[in-house]
Image 1 (spheres, helix red, strand yellow):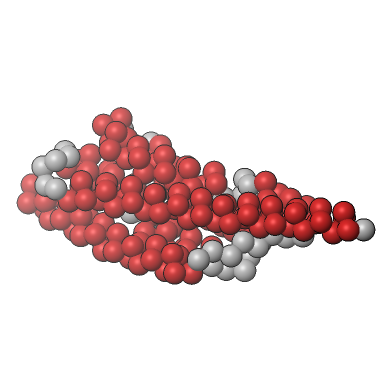
Image 2 (cartoon, one colour):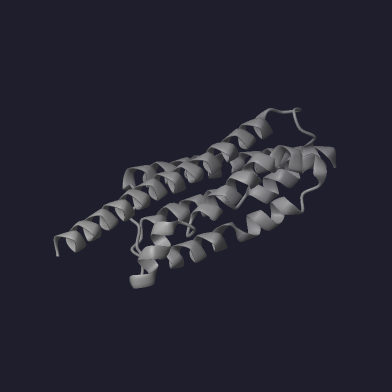
Length: 178
């Protein structure tokens, strides 16, 4: 009897440890994606650094990311099962992933880090052993640090403003060329 209790305790502690590692990894890859997007936007803000036509294509491709980051932060803080979270979150990035994949090669060079960071984040979501173990007995629900999620949401808001400014600047430049 004592052996069974000990084994159950060790198993529960191991699963809790794996879940904590998973939470940190998921938030780290999400923050890396936000940082990659911030870096790309900062590069786009430097006039003349990137050809205006290429910059416009990149801006259009990443325009939905601020909303995706905000929605992701909200979904990660929800009580949805992990599998449901993963499906919803993947849908938030679907159009951006598709847009990044069809960028011309000269634009993909600049957007590669953003694309890779999104893929890394999405691949981390439901793929943990702990989530699969818990899902076999009941629907797993992972709780994430609300403070970190709020910070990510705030950074997404700032990104949205910066991308809108880039698009407005591009529109003005296009009008001047006519």
